[in-house]
Image (cartoon, rainbow, N blue to C red; front, side, top):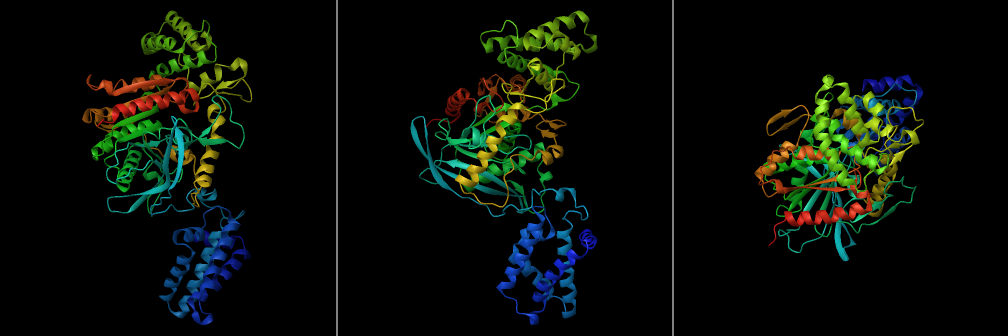
Length: 604
């Protein structure tokens, strides 16, 4: 409050004029004899504060905070309640004080005024409060899948998660696609909960690109053109054999903290697993889905989340039929600087990328047999050479460099300059340097153009830049246009700038505390306790963000009993991180998922 008053004084007469206008209104409430309060005065308050807000743009001022916390009507009623408790003389001072404080808070945000808190000085992400009361706005539509018309209900809405004392702490936004069952309480149709990762990403990618009945179509390895984008029915949807619930992570999309909770309360491996597990519990309770076969489908960091949730939900009595891991990363520990495992992990992906761009000599006709050879070399001679560290001799260094060059298309000299350890950014810049191009991180089939060829790493991710605009536009056009969902909040495609630096990567698993999470341990624990649960790992060869050899390593080091190993399946696609953007791979994904669901749901 003091900062607001000082800001008001600093800019001179303008706040006094604003204060005087507010003073007249508040005094009218305080002293009915000066003019009987009526609906017009309510409207005048609304108009005045709205005008002040418009002058300030989207920044969150005190007046905005009050308006958004109570609504204008309740704001002026609150003022009345304060004033009625005071004497007549006191009322005047209170009214003047309120007016000055409100005016000062407004002017403090204007150009040239005292600098506001940095979080408030930019467009506020939390200027509009999420609803405590749960929302659900269903509508009906249809899609043709596998030659059959599927009538479904699509419901955008929110689920309110409460703490153990019953206080609301989070409003979790979702969009659900359901095919209605006739008899309530007997819905044995599968339901799948889907989420992207980051951490810090909304579930826009899976929602608008993968398995729902509506998706945006983008070129498979080219930059998407400008609007209008191709948003339409998805004939490869899996809505014909499972209901789908797309959930946005807290702080992304339209999911927000409630009450006294802050985003940081949910930003960490274990806190994130907890809030998502509570959201799933709330959904199956609200919509009577406890007896439905239940699946999780996570992408990228969402796989780490999903693996942790499998164990957490089981502890809470929610038994899963299956977990789908799309572009898997479960173990952050092997990415710690100083460990060589990450270089071994990347080698098959480097080789696949070089094969695609035809930068290797004697290029094999088929990709997969070639990658089998690279896998064996990576886990054998390459890993052994790196393990020797500074004891690696010159002759062996030359031998390994020659073999790596044959697999990756990089020069032997460059490989030796990097001590046989080429990080991802350097590889993406070096592979096509002679052509003046870089390769993508999310999907190495995509190529980008930097300002020059001399840099050590790409200036941007060509894959991300190629498709992000189409997905963001599609999400907003579909949610707010087609579905007509109304909110004063805007949809956050991601919230990396706040979430990433605040994220707690530590994790407490079944065997205790880890400094860097590895939820493969949790997944294995859940698979031992629930031997009927199936796991499907979907991998893109050209995914450089979560390389497929890393998924193999994480999942094949779960120490599963031989009796459980058949519950784990791997499939591969000639695509990248978002496997579904490649049409042929999307068709294969649907086929593989259908078989997986059939294996995981008991037949009657």
